[in-house]
Amino acid sequence: MALVSYAVIVAAWWAASVFLTPDVLPGPKAVAEGIWGIAERPALRQQVGLTLARTLSGLSAGAAVAMIFVFAAYYFRPARAFFLRVIYPVSRGVPVIAVALVAALWFGLGSGGVVFIIVVAVLPLYLVELWEGLKLVDATLLEMARAISRRERLLLPKVILPMLVPRFYAATKLGFSVAFKVALIGEILAATNGMGFMMNLANAEQQFYLVFSWTLILMGFVLIMERLVFDTIERRFLVRWAGG
Amino acid sequence: MAGLGGIATGALCYGMVLIAWWVGSLLLPPIVLPSPAAVGAAIDELVRGNRFLADVGLTFMRTIMGVATSAAAALAVIFLARYVGWFRRFYLDALYPLSRALPTVSVGLFGLAWFGLGSPAVAFVVFITVLPVYLTNLWEAQKVADASVLEMGRAISRKQYRLVSKVLLPLLVPPLFSATKFAFSVGFKLSLVGEILAASDGMGYSLLHAMQEYKTSHVLAWIVILIGMVSALDWAVFDRLERVILRRWAFDD
Image (cartoon, rainbow over all chains, first blue to last red):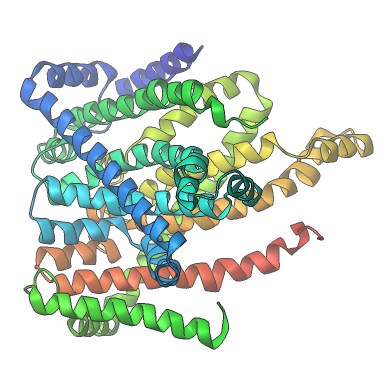
């Protein structure tokens, strides 16, 4: 069924491209050839790998930083005030594009700046999910755990962390597509390689069909990750957390 | 946390940030980290500049245009998907996942190619990229639209269009509002991306201009101004609107 829907889109795209010039709407054939050209050349394939590597590094670094902030705020009162008044609201208000510009100045052109931008972009997602999750950690469960064992240090690995897993997962799922898109912005402003840079280059060289090709490759990655990776994880491993 | 103690804690926290920033600026060159005083002076210079109000106005107008068209389009799509079987499949299989996967940069470049430099291209970027926010919120809301209220509506009148206008649409107002609140803060930031790629004015373009001249203090000044604007908007506009408009929908606890 999904195939029919996509076929309808391609047919409509093809019909529109017949009436419009290639610099306004290149046809599916030209774009497919562009994708094939990218897949054929190792140097171009590398750009996809580079963007993916930056995305994954930024996402994991963002998750790690958020965990540190959130647990510091959970366990230490002075850190909590600082977290709630500064880090939490400011991280949500920071415009990613402005950070991208500063990152180019701070890190120079390259992976460091791009990863930094991704960290800034995904940080609020993790902070919101994990903090709201920690606030809701079931008080009765904690009490029950305390009745079973007096060892406070067991609470974190046995009760609190497992309860945060679905939240963490939700943030990662959303974070991945955000990070991938932000990587492109970062690569236009703060790098000289990667898919974002190549897309901008294609545009500057007036090869509009290649902008479409890079876009479709990226969308394909996002959709495949969502359908194959995240949905499989959800079905296989998150069943334990499914509500009654 | 509220009251004088709360204000003091807040002031203390931001004071610490300022001190850390100031110490950092002593150790690093101004092009990497300008001092708080330099950024303060840059904010003052920007706010007094003759382009400031025009830039702010343009970016706001583009954001509002994009968000409003997006809300209207999403409502139309959601209603079509709710009532027309084949369109629902098309929406769930292709339209919705594709709208979520489309990267902002591509939309910016498409906007540039289709509309040229200027407001329509920037509004287009906002329109396309906030669409999934509305689609997600409205689709989930219409799915759980209170079945008993709808049934009661049906018992009172058999006219389908009245059921939509008197029951379903009002039920969708709170999710539409919360989506707009979120879409506006996202859209505002996306306008900046759009302006960098496809405009020659507005706050995004001024930001890029500051960066191209290596005026780090001005780039940081824009960041501070933007954070302030988004927070002020949340607090002054949306929180108040929420209290006034959504009162009818509030639960009596």
